Image (cartoon, rainbow, N blue to C red; front, side, top):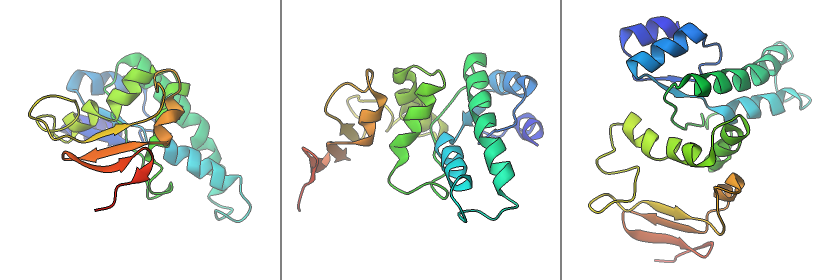
Length: 179
């Protein structure tokens, strides 16, 4: 199914759990973006390991997917498949999207590339790179900041201290800015 979708010209493949090297090569050739949703896989594995969180018939597949997702991500990154961050928050908890960065780095992507997967690569995937994805004059001022260096500790992105949306500050020093 993934191969047929890529051959047909889809823009992205989400999850991509069972991608093969052939598919990865085709995705690279066609510029098809891989959105791995690693947080979703981790969440499903956690649910599979929690009594009564999933139906018994689903648990074995959920556990298999966990290790396969890591293998696929590592192989796709090594193969040079374009990667953008996505979380499938229908599975994971809303508002915890930044947890996606952690497994990306753990599975071999350098922190700056993981951050770019969540910024410029996502903007390009959505064809919004004219307005979003980088800090440049003339672009929409959507910014977040953390205390410390996320290139040294990617988990810092899970504790955002400053939020600016379209040039308006919504969070400063970790506290919501009242309007």
